[in-house]
Length: 278
Image (cartoon, rainbow, N blue to C red):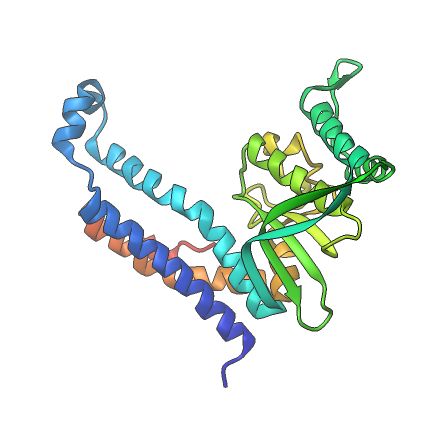
């Protein structure tokens, strides 16, 4: 009998396999690394650095860009199985009072440019949303496109998610914060919760997250609208989803590493290549 965990693992692997096949097809056939062109364009680099280094960079660029969108797809898959319903790029429309909109802009401007005693103003979600919700005025129609919108079939909780790669830039994070502030400012609210999510934490523990760009907009260690790694995956997919995600990636990782060594780099895999795990 197929369990929900089996469905989760299979769905996660299907998304990643599809991405990897497209990347391999591109770097092997559609847009391969051509040594003669590289040497002609960058003769100094070619004279000093082995071609294989730049061949690796060629692959990395064609892998990293599409993977940014894959996080959203993976999260939608996990949420659909775990909660019952999920959609990507979902438009949420509601009404926000005029003064609240002004205060959202003011809050974002203070975080971007403001200083207190010659120090940059630090984000504080609770204080910010409290100040914004005190605003009144006429109702203004507002639409927000959430990366993911999901409904729990049991609790009926409506959740909007802004999901970004683990090291997002400042502009991406600012846009996400503005969306989340608007969602919380709608009256009546069109969602029960809205979060800023990162799929994993390259720094280990939540308290150690130390990428400066999102830290301008959120207190990444304390804001309750921020979820990172296991706390995010387990929220949308149920307890154990993050470990399931890791297991799913580990199961298919070996075959793709071997193919990249043999088919792209043209070398035999080094000893221990099959022992790498998340």
